[in-house]
Amino acid sequence: MTAMKRRTFLQLAGYSALYGGLLADLAHSAQALEPAEIAGSDPGLHLLRRVSFGPTTASLARVREIGPAAYIEEQLAASDGVTEALTTALYPLINTAGASIYLSTGAGFAVNIHQLELQSAMLYRALFSSAQLHEVMVDFWNDHFNTYLRKNPVPLKIDFDRDVIRAHALGNFKTLLKATVRSAEMLHYLDNWLNRAGQINENYARELLELHSLGKAGGYTEADMKALARILSGLGFITDLPLSAALYGTVQFTAAQHDGSEKNFLGQLFPAGGGEAEIDRALNLIVDHPGTAQFIAFKLCRRFVADEPPAALVQRVAAVFSSSGGDIKAMLRLILNSPEFAASAGGKLKRPLEAMVGAMRACGINQVEQLANTYLFGTPIAAPNGLLFNSLVQAGHEPYAWVPPNGYPDREAYWANTNTALYQQKYLVGLVEGISYNYVLTDPLNAVQFGNSVASGVTRARTPRKAVSNAVSNLLFTTLPAEATAACLAFVAQDADPDAEMEAATLEQRVKGLVFVLLATPWFLRR
Image 1 (cartoon, rainbow, N blue to C red):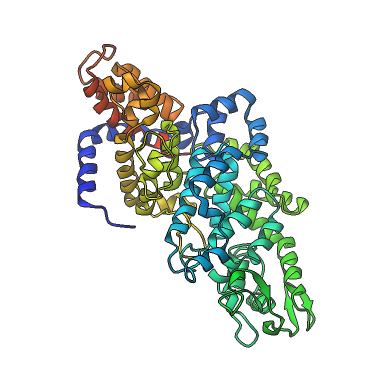
Image 2: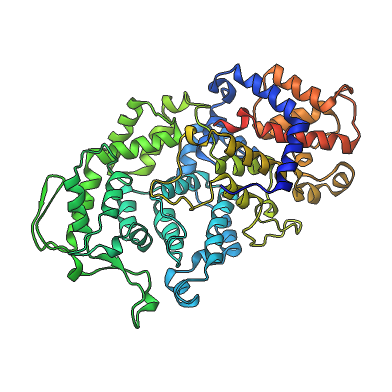
């Protein structure tokens, strides 16, 4: 995590000095409550906190209109062609194949812009796509099948994200797993392109079993892992070969590099000379193994229900995995309609990505300026160096940048620390102080008279009471306890009549503090 610049630190310190009292008051109020009490009893709001990167006024209205069960079905089938078209227009390099990057950049050694566009496209979709569950699952599988964006000078991660993860995020696990195995990005990241007879490299085989399928307790042995490494030998991709650079990244099986000897894997004999067919046979055994059903069920339940999910729910989801052949939608349907899911409100902590994207979605930012810092009155321009991206880098949650193969942690214990809180609060300073073009373009006269910050755009009020009411409703989509509401009102009014119109500049400054504090409290950060 990068060091905070002195100027930014002083700005944050100033916010803390001005608004720390209110934050402490609300924290004290939250300490008296259980997570479920903080989350509230609205099943639609609870659902949106888990199946999206944050509720919006529109999504909450939709789930209340048709009900949670129908909304789940709608999201399982959702696609958003408009957002996809805009994403491609903003970040066209995400549709560039690895071979083209290789040819156009001198073997890939000047490709930072390709990587940045992939990262920015991920954030743009998380912010704006109406197919939110699909985006959540893309994030989930990119962690589950983690590869580090910068290991390969040629960012084959672009192909991996587009053609493997995004294409199969709500499909079938067996199909998804097999697609990852035959991805040049994965074969490079976990070194299987170096795995050949006489020089067996066990790295990929180990992670394929431990992280991608059966899990550490999945019922395989060290001998199974070694056998799988030999089965995978010879599976690589075309690299810098004479006359074949245009095919860079094309996965290929080289029989001469395959260990053709007899093998025993997961209790099954693989006779000598099996060749490439051994790979699919081994993968079928892996997917059909009960350990894989158990492990995938556990991870899905951890993502959507609790850091330590109920064992009974995990068993039911594992049974659906086995009976459906790994149907991802079927597993999600069971999880999201389960009583364990309904009872889990408030039990998860937002990771920085969810907290920061969710803050923008709650603020109603429907332009790109806060993503890309364009400041051109909503004109979308690809500039992947904005507030959101830089803040995620500082908070340690940069998209696709986790180096080890296990993916970003999905546990509160990892993220509940002062460093994460510090950088999230730094981000909030920039957000609430930022320009809200939404506000400027829809009501320019009020923007001039009453300010045009994101914070004032959230509240659109002239009195302290209305400012508090609007901020709580628009950001949290729920109510605060009486004690916390009174603290907010006292902070904004500061001895003035809470129902009397306040001088615009004074009200806006206090509203900035109010919005900053609300987005830093458990009422926003728990999900």
